[in-house]
Length: 472
Ligand SMILES: [Ca+2]
Image (cartoon, rainbow, N blue to C red; front, top):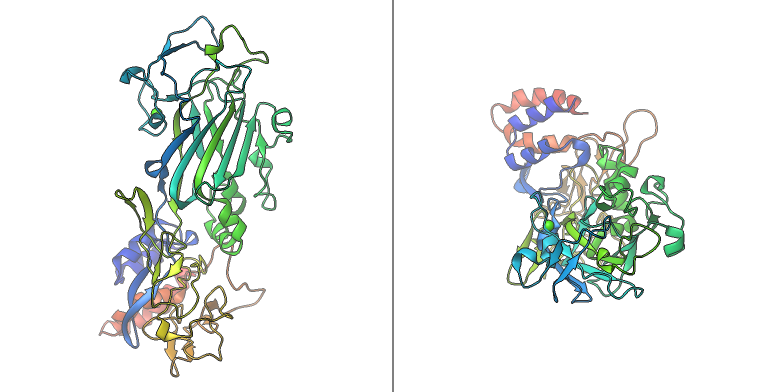
């Protein structure tokens, strides 16, 4: 069991924030909310760097919305609408000049939970048979990573045809995320599928689903979803207990990471609910779109170099507060004078604290190291493999021999002590990507070390092996 060990860890912790963060999650999740902490080594106080990311949050607070065509919102001129189910029930008035009767786009993102709901509404399908098409574009002006399902709630029937698209380049180019239709074959010449039919191998497939489009029969089911969590579950299990496995995949599969990353989303409403196969041409005010709520949960993409993302009101955009000597809106490059090795994204591995891959000062290494690996492991023959100030030796290793060698803590190996040493019988993985990875001994050692220096150190030195045994 891990809990007793965690409590022991907390009792002797020198960095309270790290411990609190660690208690929030099972160790298998990793705790990427701390970028660095101060630790004692034989050479004194220094920094231990960790991979880190901002907390997931409600991202609809930070977007701008645009509609195409721009004048598609109802109420100018005022209009009266009938319900889809009953063409004689026509008491839904829309008037853009009256607050109580207006349905502007911001009502898709206001606080919900009140009755009646507030919603955006389009003009009706007055120009039938010309298609009633509306694009709703959500822009963050920042790269974000989706962490939960996108949920769109329709107050009228759900559209019979709809497409969700995403952009990774601030709206210059678009690619489909998911197609929605009452009849996928007819609307998009695609076979209908559900997210449950996806496998790890086909996770990135773009599908057309009929699950969210049947308006008339399912009139009380108002939501259309893009299922992020079901896709996560293909790696992390149904309850997402094994996030280590997902993080491992995100680390090694660029396409997978990009799949959940967007700068913009575009909801393309292509055909409103009609409730039947025939459109009632004598009463076109039954057909329109109305959306009361859009949920988008995610986090700023900071390349695992920041645990904080702030909204700059003046610029009207989100930006990462970069650590690890990185800079840029996504911490996507090294700071000036910190080009000692090429910039690299942080790594989720090894769980739970990852690898920071910090940018190092230009004077601490060659400007270009073409043969540095993704872990930032320098070639053994090059000078300055490690550096005391920057603490490049990982997992508790220390730098010796004029910066040319890391002395690794027990259980670790590699030029920078980046790998767990294989122990015991049976096959052994370099990095666990599933199952229950071991909490690393040196992490404990870091926190215990300061106390080992004092008189209680003798007692703790005796207790340390017990703690380590209980964790692993
Ligand atoms: Ca609303």
